[in-house]
Image (tube, rainbow, N blue to C red):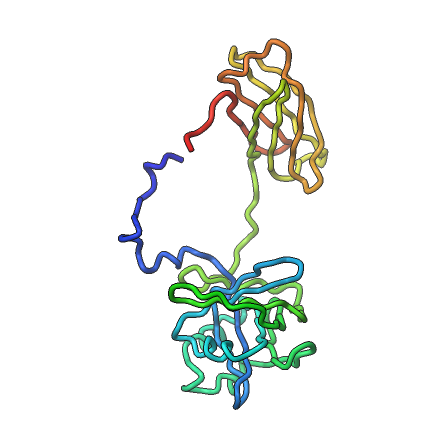
Length: 267
């Protein structure tokens, strides 16, 4: 897509609500305090590491939970299901000083097994976390915890996501096209592609080179790589002129993917 289609803003004109372009699963954060447990909604809740599993929660100065976490060693995170939209809205609308949010009948706490902090039931997953580090940002603060226990929700639950407002998840995006890239070196052509599953259940990708003289070369059919994508190295056909050449990758039931050879986009 041409850069002319994009509006350009400098640091002085970036809108204050630009962060709302982000999409994230709403988290319910629980932290113990002297009189019980506080629960807040935090839309900036993310996984930061796979193994061990780490989660990060980013909080503004207005969040009472930020003060509680500063003196805590643990917390819990529940990634909300769509059915918890009303609860998430409530938990994010009032502070600990105003109300004990755990008195709501919509908020049901589960018993911890690895920490002393309960977790909110009804979500996709609930995570008991031990606080590992705190990252100071210009305004916000990120609390990073290691997941030491995990409570799974029902398998058919779908996430409650924030993208400005709260949204439900629709149908899974159906991929219809192959996307390809290619380059050549030392007489070899390296081709890479992703795309949908083959319509005929025959796991093959068909590669063609259209050289700079318009001559088409069939470079064969090849199976997928380990994770279902495609990568292959084949010899450049003798006599093929690679300047202004192109590669086409086809897969049954999908629009073919095309890659340029002999030129690079500006960087």
